[in-house]
Structure formats: structure tokens, C-alpha cells
Image (cartoon, rainbow, N blue to C red; front, side, top):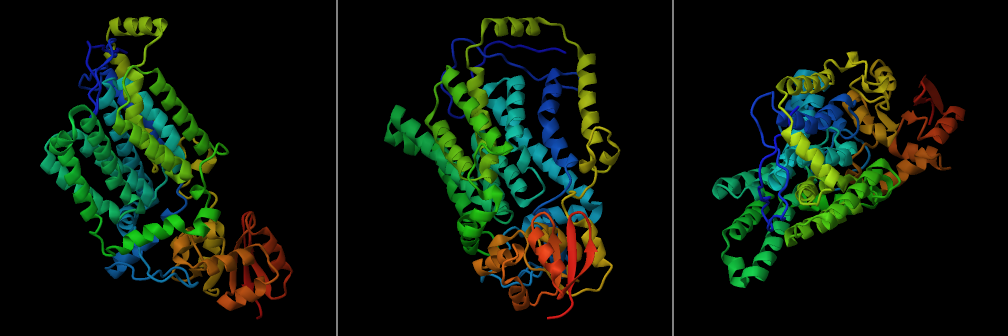
Length: 525
């Protein structure tokens, strides 16, 4: 394989400082499959594509698919939640309605395999834009690819099919348009359109205007310091960012719910049940793999900044501080750090002084003969590996473990759901909250769950009752009576005490039992 090393080129980020005296190594693009550039691009996109396709589906996506199905059947938006029977918080807002349709339509025609495939394309496109922005700033495709792979590692646990994953792509599209600096009129319209779609897809939509505001503030500070306050007002780029910010802000109102969408985001972010019980909303620590990846990424970035010969711009300081703070707040925010800061990392790494042995190695690689046949072989192997992970054929992939072969995650109660579908049992069920979305998808409208993954749609009193019942509090029978529940679909792992109590009670009869679930029907009140 050949590394093509060009002459000195200054890194050209949107807020670049003069290049270091030592020119960076440049990997140029030679068109065609025989190019080493093709290999590096495929390597950078390999994990973002394969990881989502090889993982079974789980989590929030189930009630999203069911919501999309119901909207298509009814021909309109949901005015209330039909899936859970327990009391709802006033002011129902289905802020993710567009994401639900985006994921449901592939499932309607291609099954769950279509959902996984579309999600993989979204994730790959997201990190393709990360690669492009990193490459633009450092002018070294090899380094940009390595940084993109590191970013994928940081984000890996948050790439399942869900509305937030679509938000990642919209964030990177906004980043691309905000830093292009070409055809500003078209870019302004595109940014507004992206923001309007984002507002109807996921509550992270505020990050679009927030990113623009950070770029505007950093750019204005840099111009004011070097050229004065008047220049900060007249600079075309800053005018573009100001117009973009205004257009994005207006676009957030292009939703059926208007300002109620902002209230929905506020409620999600401040809900005490979410903050206390849902692990992805906990502060990021080193106690899990996502936290370790985040703090490792922060450490690498700080080391690169200290090592680099390039001056850190005010804009980059604001981006680093803002997204590091966001990542520290909750585990689910770690991805935004990886997406926003990878191009900064690449630009500073390329300007870091290389050890003598590494310079000699790079020089030898640059002088090496081209090997197009080897490039084609490696690229073909990567494409073959990606194809073997496609959801339609992955069950025949010998490299995947058994728990990755199916389309439904092993943790979902597939056996219990199949049993319930074959029976005519009472409709209202107490269920393990983590199974709620899957049970919505499989069993509604024949059965209704008490709760699912949408914490915000129920008042705290419902969650208090759910916890008291699930943990086998002395009042568990009375609380079940209060909700009119005649069916229990219990997790042996998470509701073991309740399984024991129901099994010992004459008021409940065990009708189904497997390694993960126990189903009870009420015999008397």
C-alpha cells in the first residue's frame, strides 16, 4: 500500500492560526478503489457501520416503532399516549414524532433488519462528516481517520436505533454547513431546514443554535482582539453566523407543538425520576466503559493541545469547555463531546512535533512504491466484513457471538410476549419498566403496560407506586388494586422479591415461567 506525501500545506480550519515551521504530512486522495485514501476512509467508517448492524435492537426504539405504526394507521399525530394506562402528566407532547416515522417506515417494508440498516447508514454518515471535518482541518487523511476511529470508540455505547442517533447526524450536518464558508445563502436555508427537522426528531435540537452561538462568540472575540469591535460587526463570516443563529431559532418553532416543545425539553432535563433512576442520565464517571472512554478522550485531547505548535483559538476553547461540560453532566451526552471536538484534536495533532524515529518512518512510507493491488485487496476485505454484518446475513457470520445473531436483544421478554399473544388474559399489566417499550410494540392494543421508557409522561406519584410494587413493599397488593391491575409480567432479575411474594399469594396464579420472566394472573381481589 502507498502513502502519498505532498508538500507543505497550512491547516485551514475556520479559525486557523499560522502553520508551524515543520509542514504536516499530507495524505492526498487518488481517485479509485486502488487508492490508499479509499482504505483509510473505509477503515474510519468500518466500526460506525458494523457496530449498529451487528447489535440486536433494544431500548427506546420499540415504542418509537409502535408510535410510527399507529400514526400511519390513524393518519395523524398522537394526541395522547395510547400504550400505558396509568395517569399521564398534562400536556402530552410527542416531540419525536418525525423520528418515529423515519424508523417505522423501513420496518414496515423491510422488518427490523431495515431499522438496523437505516440506523447504520445514519451512524456511518455521521462519522463520515466527522472524518471530513477533521480532514479539512488537519489536511492529513490518515490522522483524520485515526481520530475518527477514536471518536467512534467514545460514542460506541450510544449508537443504537433511537431518535437521539438521528440528532447526531443533524448536528454534524449543521457543523459542516457552519464551517464551509461557501454559498452562504444556500447554507442559511439548509441550516434552517435541518433545525426544523431536528426539532421534530429529538429534544437535542437546541444544540444546533448553541453550536452556532459558540462559533459566533468565539469568532467575534478573535476579530475584536485582532481588528477591533467595528470589524467584529462588519466581518462577513460573523454576519453569516448571526443570520444562521436567527434562522435556526425561528426554525425551532416549526413544530405542531410550538413553544410546548421547549417545555418538553425542560421537563426531560429536570425530571427527578429520570435523573435518579435512569443510568444514562447520571453524571459521567470512570465506573463504566463510556465514562472511561470519555475521560480518556479528554486526556488525549489535552495532551495534544499541550504538545501542538498551533495556537488554540478562542472558538476552540469555547467548544472544548462547552462540550466537556455537557459530557460531564450525563453519560448520554458523551457522544456530543466526541462529535464536536474530534476535528480540533486532529488539527492540533498534525502540528505536534514528531519524534525523529517517526519522521524517518513517515519519510520511508512516503518514498515507498505504490501498491494498488494491495490497496484493492485490503479495501475488498473491509467491504466484505461490512457486508457480513448486514442484518439479513449476520446470523451466518461465524465471528459474531450468539447473543448478537438475532434482531431482538436477548434481554427482551420474547417468550413471555409470545405466550401472552396466544392467550386472552386481562389487559392491564404491571410490567418491568425496562421491558415496557418492547411489550408496547409486541402486545398493544390487546394489552396495556403500566409504564415504559418514557419517564416524563407520568407524574412522580405513578413512579413511586411502580417502585413500591416492584420492590415488594407491604402495600403492593393495595397499589395493584388501586390501578386495577390483573396481570403481572415480572422480571426475575429486577423484580425478584415481587415474584416471590406473588408466587406465595393465593390471589395470584403463575401461568408462565422462564429464565427471565414470570407471568401471574389475578385469581381474586
